[in-house]
Image 1 (cartoon, one colour):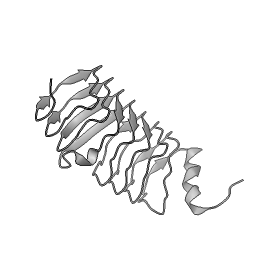
Image 2: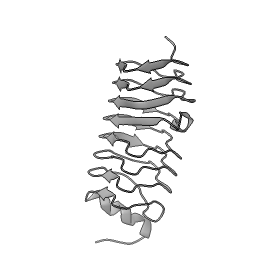
Image 3: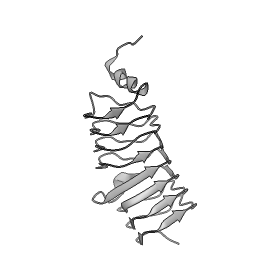
Image 4: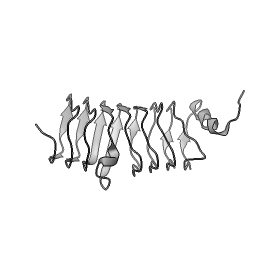
Length: 172
């Protein structure tokens, strides 16, 4: 079954391997991907409207190629590796209990996003709006407060101490 130029509504995809599939110009509306491998899929003009990725592997996805006007994904318990979310409006997106490694959030609106209980090792936050986002119990993030907009952003100790790294100070 091909996935290019198709429309899927209220569909549940479970335990499927989509590696290297082409989702170009397709619409996924109110769909759920659960326990799926979405490695290296092509997202040119793909529409993700109210789509949940639960316990999925997302490797090398370039979300900047997807339809930016309607992009409302939600991620739970997923492995997100080397994905590109730069220059996107992801306001209120959930990244709950995820492993988000080496992904790029440069110039993105991440206001009111939920990164709770996620590991963000190697992910880039540069010139991003993180106002009212939650990083409670998140770890391994590297966020420079001088290069991102932080207002009422929630962090938890002890990982919040990493915010001081950018200021080249020493703590005892």
